[in-house]
Image (cartoon, rainbow, N blue to C red; front, side):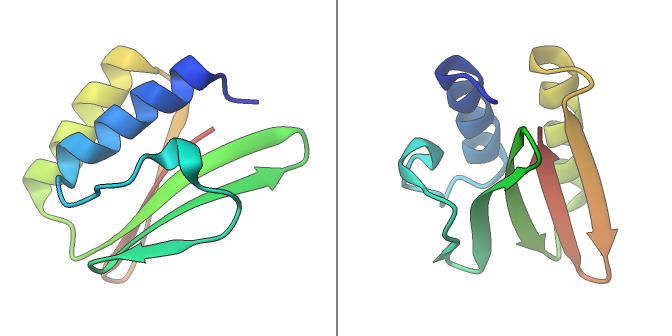
Length: 92
């Protein structure tokens, strides 16, 4: 399970790479919200909770910023999955 502090850190990272995200991830349930082409979700797999964002046509600087911040603030807790033009950035 992610703690409230970890969710806050993740929320900050997502807002840094996609400033148009206006609502806090903390208020999201397992439902998915659509915000200007970005999908934010929260899923539970086994005993783990994952927070993720899907970005269509991610820019290289966004991916580099995400990797840099994630490595510094939550190392070994993130996954990047690329499928065509959709990139999913996941924290577990």
